Image (cartoon, rainbow, N blue to C red; front, side, top):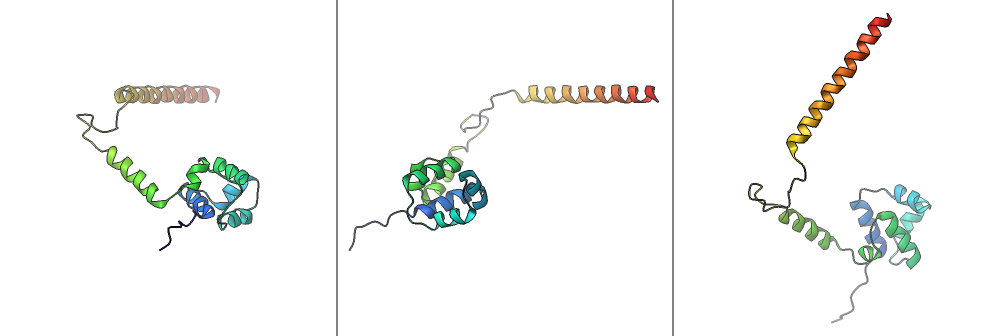
Length: 132
């Protein structure tokens, strides 16, 4: 029985992270200043040189370590934990949902902006009819 672990396929990890970020190969290619075909070749490579890996990580907005140690299971665990930890009763503030502003203030602000927009529209229409 072998205890050798299969190395992570860096190209596949790059591909999955890119897909999770809803980024097309063309967009990554543009960010890296390379062709889409070169991105495809990178994603099909099991390894990638360190300098290129740093550039790809920067373009994807993740760390080199995130690419090297990426796993589907970790992503699902992260989102499941995020969802589970964000649940709670709002009345007792057991969740992560803490409002940092007063919603009523936002309603008043929106109302004031709507009233001002109507005033501006009326002024514009009055000026338009005076000029005729």
